[in-house]
Amino acid sequence: MDISKVKDFVKQQLQGEKTGHDFYHGQRVAHLAKKMYLADHQSAHEDSRMVAIIMTAGYLHDTIDEKICAAPKTVIAKIKQLLPEVGFTDLEIKDILFTMQHMSFSKNIEQHYQLPVSGQYVQDADRIESLGAIGIARAFTYGGKHDNVIYDPQIKPQEIVNHDQYRNHEETTINHFYEKLFKLEATMNTVGGEAEAKRRTNYMKDFVNEFMQEWDV
Image 1 (cartoon, rainbow, N blue to C red):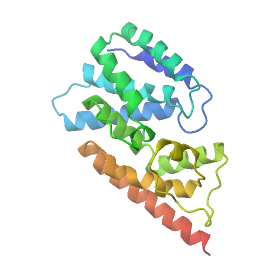
Image 2: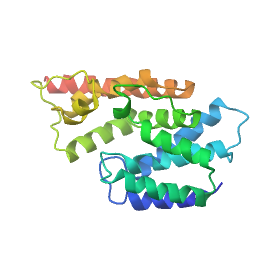
Image 3: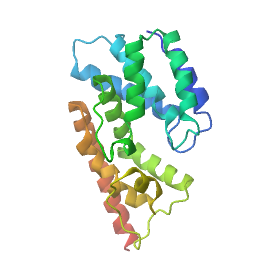
Image 4: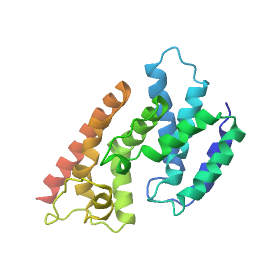
């Protein structure tokens, strides 16, 4: 299935995005989710409809994210018009939209949404994108864009218990590693996701340990 229209739509929607949730983030999520799915399903064909669903949700997921989208309902309406043109069935569109609307960390703080199989790979890939070297770069990019300080020993990490607290509490970029990023490894749905999340989390922990040593010089 040709999803080039989906890619063009995402490029248009996320043009000028500078917080680490740009087109290339969506592209990496889509390809990582596809890679993990094919690794777990050796008999699956890379041109299957399941792969198209996974990649489409991966590309599209941040186009309706509340952090960067002022009118999610408007964008959802556009997506509902776009996906039948690409060739997706009503059920496939339902799965894609459910994944997009329920996969985020903030949506799952107070309750856990059970995603379709396709969505589990997309969710894992998106969270893995918050880890490792790229995760570190994205964390500081986002923190700088939102005027967060890098670190302040007087501001302690919090245990995040609800959406409003997550969005509105006083935050530093280093605290974000403790409040969210280091916890993502335990939320993986897939075998491939667990392995890659562990590898990238270990890399991030080494970085934060080094940061703290340098801070205390």
